[in-house]
Length: 568
Image 1 (cartoon, rainbow, N blue to C red):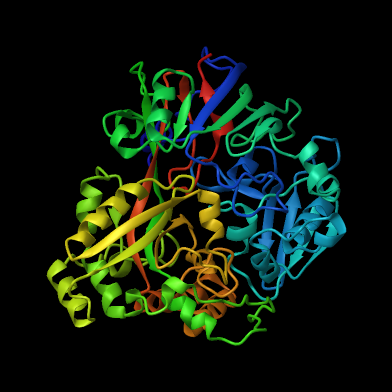
Image 2 (image 1 turned 180 degrees about the vertical axis):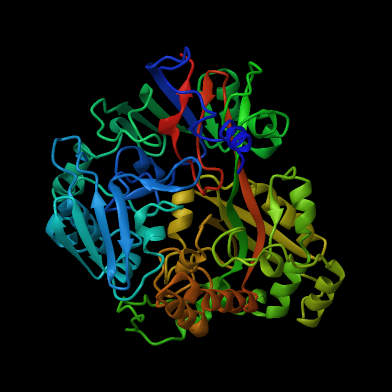
């Protein structure tokens, strides 16, 4: 790159293109920053007791490493790591500590990794391990403290997705808390989390509101992670999209996470007017967009229910984790969607491109893959952008062949999880398309946390059809974690898919995973029990008070609110 090109590039990227607190007239310290959002995930503050992901933890607990706003893996609690076939060795920041003064050292890393596995459930008084403890057990065989700043994590084999699960890469799935507090049990922990992140919890209204106070003695001083400019940060959950926008327009909040596409389409887009994530300077509300942040699939759950309910009790998976017993819901007995011709017809009846162009205003993209666009091992031409056809005539023919020429009635399920836009619009569109082929739909919307819990292995409550949402995974080896028998959020699987899951996760390098990942995806789609619908983007909107929000462009959930810079 020539010097002039390098200067031009720096003028459009983080950190060079972004205003900084305390420089060029930007105040060094301001009061409160407030965000309205659709959801932050589960309202669980304890990282060892999570029932699903909860992105609040980014701001008061720790991760080993993190993405900087350019999407590059960067230091956090750990300065660096090395991975071999035997495991991972982390070098920790010697300045790291928790808010009660205790050291955030190698022993704290070890305690957390064992806590994720569920090793301290009885000792510390927890009712159950966290929701994805089976994955933690599979990835971490043992932990050895070498020194206060060095820790070795033993793995059984290469475990090439370890960092994408437990390390902080991409989608955040685990957070590291203060073991001194966690070992006291869930009730004592809620009295004072005393985490290691840049904020402490000042006020907490589960499901509704959280107020953070800045930790003025926060230990990190990286360009990408340091003491925030503002003394307080407030998150509000506001489920109604119009209400979120009204709060922004009246400047009662400074930012909105997940502004509906219909409201966002006419606002100033920072990407088009200068630098992504920097106020364009027009004195008005402005936006930036998270690209390819998630996807939606349409999943028919009755076939997997009948398949798994026929299996004997007492099974364990290859990792030694107990496989739950399944029972068949009454609605699934002799249900039309047990016939593959019916499922195929229902998919052919949906014009996915028209939905993206119409009610999604071009902010979504129809897809044909269970892997995210641009993720490791995704096949863009062969799968991601190879979308199933729209053919209502063939759909009617298939229904008639299956014995449903006059159609039938069916109920379906969806939830609006944090940062997953466009789902109700897709549900409405599906109802309309299916009505055209004689199928009458009734949709039920669920609380997002309850909805996610409904996909536990052995439960899979959302039948006969659901709209299943998936946050972006930069590594498809993590995405397949959901397509197997002991997942905390189950996708479609059968015996062959389960075998391929273990083949892929048993590979020693990412490259060795690729053929297994491709075959697993092909097998999942061949069941015709789950159909990809669209890939999502998500719009963040800001008042003119916000000068900048440096954050990664491709992400499944909100990040880097601690880096926001305000004008007063």
